[in-house]
Image 1 (tube, rainbow, N blue to C red):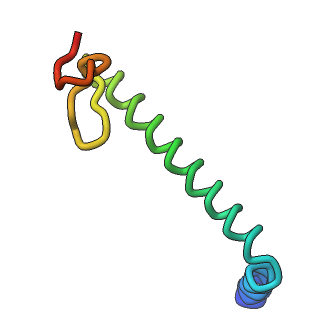
Image 2 (cartoon, rainbow, N blue to C red):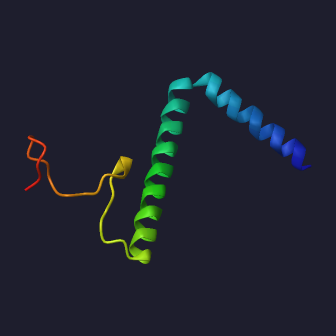
Length: 74
């Protein structure tokens, strides 16, 4: 019974992708964005629990404030 349901779900997903590819792409993009946001929030939560005082941006560069444009931070 589980296999039949799995095949039906797969067929329905493929039909949705083939019949409306733009909508499927938009939905996939929204889901990926939501997962990325959830992952970032988990990282922030774990950092706050562990006691990390500096927030790290992407590429592990410590947050120092707003850049002035000449490479320095106020």
